[in-house]
Image 1: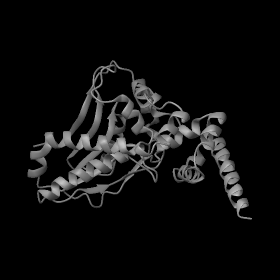
Image 2: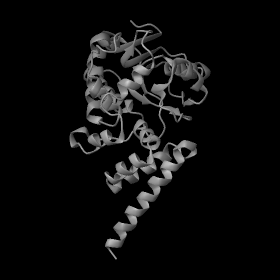
Image 3: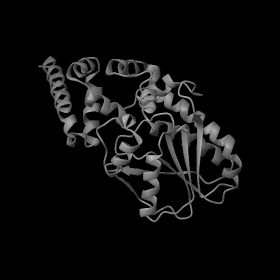
Image 4: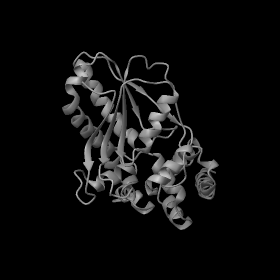
Amino acid sequence: MIDDEQRFALHTINDPKNLSFDRYAYSRYKYGDSNQAKQFGQELYTGFLDRYRDFLLSSNQQFIAISSPRSTIPPAVYYIFQTFIEKLNRFLQLNKCEPIIEHTIQRIGTIAEDYSLLSRHERLDRLIDERYSIDCQDFGNKFLLFVDDIRITGIHEMNIIRLLKTSNIYNSRLFIYYAQLVNDKIPTSFEYELNRSAISNLEQLLTIIHNPSSSFQINTRVLKEILRSNLSELDYFLQSISTDLMSQLYHACFACNYQTIEIFVDSLEYIHRCLQQRQNEKQAKYL
């Protein structure tokens, strides 16, 4: 049996120097290593199943799985979510249970800053900018599973709970995390340090992009990292990637509406100029 609202974390963090998971692998995952995301998704599924196998098999409710709020371009956790749901669905189907329904919380607003650098107070202040929307037509008597990678302050979770209340959604639910910070004495900046353990600049990001075993996937963290970089770093990065990837990154920024964020405009314009130059050079070869 499970309470109306409960939380599961595969890893708990009490000492930032003694983690039960690989901080460097976590950093690579945050910056687009989708194969690492798949591994984390497998680990999360295995740990979740060990804890909730009986509940999953005895529940008379169908499950709806919801990843971290997203727009057109997903955050890194979506790639953990995909593997987690794929494995969990296979388990349910083998046991003749109804499959999980995947649902989405739409992110309407976002912030330009690196969220992991913000204090708890600053994160609370940004709640007004972190606007979400959810379509609740198909929820009925279903059990909600919210999947995210890490819980630091609980502000995102609080925002989702607030959204559910304002949307008159009172379904039983479970918040599922790969890791959770449980020591309040650890500053929230720990998240920033964790995210950047292996990847802290665009040159290091290239090690993921150019490594076939990483299977690089664009996510919102990658886009913001690129747009926040200085001109020299950005130029080196753009000269080191293919025209196709440059085009994908450029159009992904517009899909996220980043052209409306003032501090991103100059970088976007520079990417556009570099992309046009590349495309013009390519066309000139065929003349």
